[in-house]
Length: 252
Image 1 (cartoon, rainbow, N blue to C red):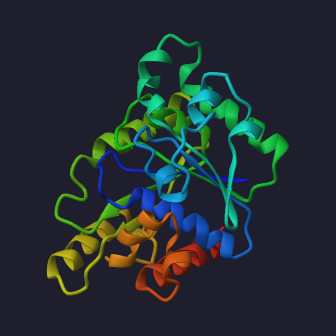
Image 2 (image 1 turned 90 degrees about the vertical axis):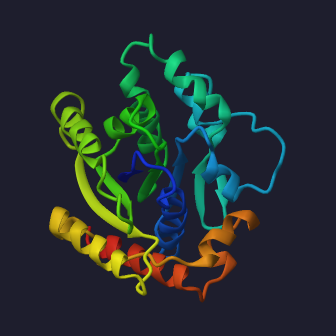
């Protein structure tokens, strides 16, 4: 089971879009995939669910010990996901006094590994470096950093990399920055080209060759509760995320 946290402390970089559509791309390649929504904003959950009623159980309940993974896995056209909810927003305070609070998600992942045969588990992290993100970093082996092809892409990234080092030293010595995904790329903008060049200079071979182009279909798909492949399989977004999925699968 390959475990990956998709992260960036900045919002609006395409992190949730990448988690959903990379997962869907890997599923199209025949892999068994689970997505975990660890963001209290629950954008991944709202992007995939057509039901408006309140969820009975979410990742919040699993972290609090009030649900087994069997209770919270939802099927979606070729892959599974574990939903989030606004209740998770209080988890940082509620879990602060829990013993081994940074390892709660790791316990959930152990149950997944024992009871399920997923090839990939992708975690959509919140846009901050708090306790939930720390839980994700403690539970996975790889981090994929999602970077927007804009001027401030590398700004503040040192804090994220510092947290990775702390987790490697104290909590999870198997953790690695496994890849950098460049998103929202517009080839007509010289600035985008320059920024991608800077990202490649900074991270070298960790930057995936596939760059995700800015594409209106990617922005529209969530409102229809569909992945990019369900919404517009011929779009640039579908082409890019399928190419990225193949690159990741072949690079294992």
